[in-house]
Length: 305
Image (cartoon, rainbow, N blue to C red; front, side):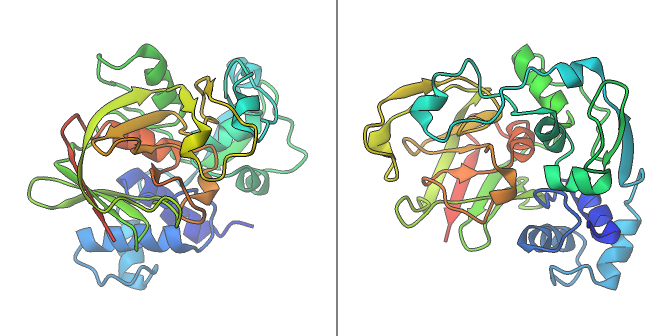
């Protein structure tokens, strides 16, 4: 079962831009990372724990209750949903989209949590039908005034992921391999936001150095080339995978000045920081979408060990 105190802290941190990754009411390195970032901005001892001083500071910023009851709509239920995805990219390329497998997975992403947490907050017997009321982490946002230049489809993606408009603007980003974090700073080097990330593997290590964001692709296709993947299966061929939150790069790709590298979403948010990537910077879909509103072409991205 989720710990109510921890979940409340995760919800507050998520609202503030210090992402705990998935909101699940559990201790873990992503919560420790989020607490450390928050503590830095409040001149608190950087313990990474929910100590009394940190708990008191968060309580002052609590806002609405951490749990929300929502009513499922016919559109929520209708999807469309694609069912379980095949594992191989060349098989995924045969699908018309890489959307959510089912309504439970969609709701988990919308409320920045996991399917297991939703079941724990409600009941395994809860019927996910139109008109049903379910409990979710309260990450709902009211600000939907997204930049007019964004594609309409991506605006719907941002809305569906509960990503608020009006995000702070980044002067530069710092990605830390050792901390498994992406930090957003202003021109005075003030920490504005922080996210847990996966930063590479022994086969495709994080490219340490100074790079730049050169552009963004919203709800992108994915061009699979087995020659670029050390773990590609024998016989796999080049293929184009259709867009969707369950695509290999999720809902957004932020292209970097380092060829073949980018910052992007993932179909498996619960694995951020716990598994390996092919060298790119992988984030939850909602965190990647939020970051996409903070950066612009030319934003420096500093990769550290």
